[in-house]
Structure formats: structure tokens, C-alpha cells
Length: 415
Image (cartoon, rainbow, N blue to C red):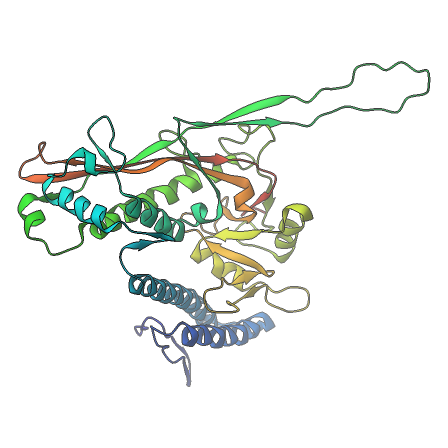
């Protein structure tokens, strides 16, 4: 099969080759235009298939365009992220979020990273164990990047805590009442009951090592380097745990709270309801409509779809009763594509469209899932354990679980 260059696709039938021009990888607007053009080609090919003209070549064409659209969306998002990073860099390395950096502290911290020759009095927030809390510039930078990479964190309720855990009290609001006559007796009615949930953080750690000579001679910004390393690994671990974590030294994943899953009975208000897809291997329009309408209107104001990139392709083929595709490309650069006009949030760790899988979530993630953060990032410089290497033992304590199952629905691939 002919190799297809990223950002473009060539689709062949006997006597015909359709080629979409490659968009400028640095121009999100051009990439958006290419996605829209590709979607038009996709609709034409899919319409032929739906009219009974399907053959092997046409089916391959539909799937190739479908895959290409997903890849283009990924490339466009990367271009947007790169531009944002350049804008942030142009603003100066000493400004993080809305807080100006402390040049003197940054200078001292770099010296500590290289030599360990800065006294504890010059650090901000030294721990009794001799470790150093990461400077606020690091903590805010890593948290920001986690929000971009971990889609659950970016959309969930995030609760900083200053103790070993977080407890939440819930009530069933089961107040009884009844109609009575003027002189009838008034027997006791039911009283609301209370229940408690604990959100206990687990701990993620990284322990990178570099030689003392490299620390002495490297002409790099050690803060950025270490932040990038911790960022990648911590976000990967968080993303997995927020979706499917078993709660053992880690968060409880949201999928463990759906009906029939391990934590279906954990929350006092019950499990996240499940809607079957209407097909043992795919998704039907009726099931999608049932999924959306099963969420009460007062809980749907901030509802979004949560699924992985591969699953989006399955929903892209579905049309409504009027013949309109329920998937639509991004309306503008930086905006997500939509299903039934609801934004799609890509969560890499969500399962694929396959028999028995929860292939999508629909609802208000901020009202549903809580992430608890204990303090932030802590770095302990260790030049003694493994000479001549210096280890930077980095930890972050984070937990998570369902705060309220009512504003979320799950779509299961099942007839």
C-alpha cells in the first residue's frame, strides 16, 4: 500500500486518485480548512456506501479519510499548543501564570540544583525531612501542563488539601411528608440519612539521576528540564488512574463507578447509569439520543463527551433522522469538534469501541469527578546515595473519585 504522508491522504479507486493538499503545519487556520474539506470528502464517500454502492475499495476510502481526519485534528491541536507555548515563552521565563517570578529565588534554586550549596534559609517552604518543596514556578508550570495533557483533570473539580485526606458528607434528602386532616394524628416521617466518602491521595514519584559533572557543565535550564520529565510521567500516570484506577495507592477511576463495575455501590447516591449502544460491536443513533436525553436538563448545561481518538471515528459515521451527521468538525481554531453540538474531549485512556467496553462518557465532569491534590510537587536533592550521580527525588500526592454520579452517563457497547 502506498505510504500516506502525515497531514495529507491519497485515496484511490480504479481510474481515480483523490489527494488532499498538505496544510502548513504551523498554520492552525489552514489545518482547520483542510479538516473541513476532508470531512466533505468523507461525507461523499460515506453517502455512496450507505446507498448500497459499497465495495472493498470504497470501504477502504471511507476508513482512510476517517483516520486522516482524526490525524489532522491531532496535528492541529499540536500546532495550537506549540503556538501557545511560544507566546508564553515570549512573555519571559520568569512569569508563571499571573504571578511574576522571583529572580533572586530562581537564581538560588538553580545553584541548589547544581551544587546543593544554598542554605535552607534561602528556600521557600523547607520540610523537616531536609527536602525542598518545588518553587512556585515549578508547581504552577507542572499543574498547568497536567491540565492540558490529562483531560480528566482539566475538566474535573480539583480540590487542594492541606491534610492527609479529604472527607465529604452526603445526604439522601429523604424527608418524608404526607397529607392529613385537621384532627388526624401526625406519625413520624422518614428522616434524611447521612453517608461519608473519603478521598485519600496516593503518591506518584520520579527519581531521575544525572552526574555531578553534567550538572556542573550543562548549559541548560534545569528547572525546565526536570519539569518536563516529571510532567510527562506524572500526567501519564494520572491519566490512567483517573479513568480506571483501582484506588490502591492511587485514585479511584471514574469507570469503576459505572453500573456493574467494582465501585458501583461505593457512592451513597448509587452508580453512574449505563446506556447500551444498541449494537454488540458499534453505536446506533437511537442509543446516542437515549444517552443524551437520559441526563436531566438541569444537569446538562456543561455536558461534554469523553472518549478516545479512535472511538471518534465510529461516531463520525452516524447521521440523524434528517440526514445530518451528528459529528461536526471544530467551528474555530482551538475549539473541539462536537457530537450533537456537545464538545468532544479526547481522553486517551478511555476504552475503544468494542464489545462490552464503556466507549464514551457524557455529562458534566466538573460536577461528577473530584481530584484532590496534597500540597504540590516536592523535590529532594540526593547527591549521596548513588555517587557520582545526583538524584532528584520528586513526588506528588494526588487522589480522586466520583463526587456525584448523577451528572454523568456511560455508553456501553452492547445490544
